[in-house]
Length: 297
Image (cartoon, rainbow, N blue to C red; front, side):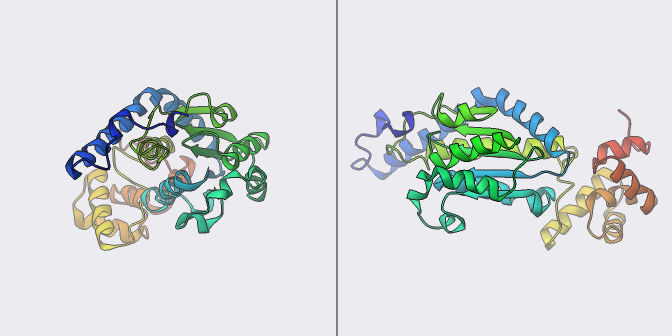
């Protein structure tokens, strides 16, 4: 497998000056980011398909082991504060369980039966989107979980760094980033892990955009839970509603911190009508503003 091979330029990395060693590692990271470009069309297709499924009430479910699982958990956990994604609509199937997030439980990744069991335990079905991430693309736990999710009717997405790997063959959408060899052979927390983080960033943020949780590059689903975020929320409402910051702050107080609702209140819409329109538009602020005549197509 390409991810198990050693970069030809790193054979003497342990005896090179530190500045040279760091540059070798940096070069691999740079190539890893560039490797994602070839997968962008498949990422976009996966985003559109996933958003269509998640427009209902299903869950975004991440499956992985080791480094891949930790990267996926980081991405998934950040959807709650950033986009207001409901906690009950994100789930994780991690080889070795939660304990594997801060310690090594390496043998857990070989348990294919456990991968299937996790999917069944979560009650995965047609309303869910399951994303399996594995650098090698051969991790038994992850491959089995994605196959089981497919059998349960879920939309499945595979992310891997080796071509035509079992994970990619098991998934409906196959995102391959050719990060190649590693500066330290097999250490996929380096190039492969970097590419995985980039792909998950694109995938999750793209889904949130398509679900109307972003307006003009602003995070309108954000939860203003501290002073920094409350100041940001005021700026967001002020920018979208075209009002002063004092009016934006008042609207946020009247909406209990709901930025989308505050944007309509600050524009002069009655609170009951504003709530009704957002419900009718499934929370899509731009669509609600257009129906209310606050902006044109």
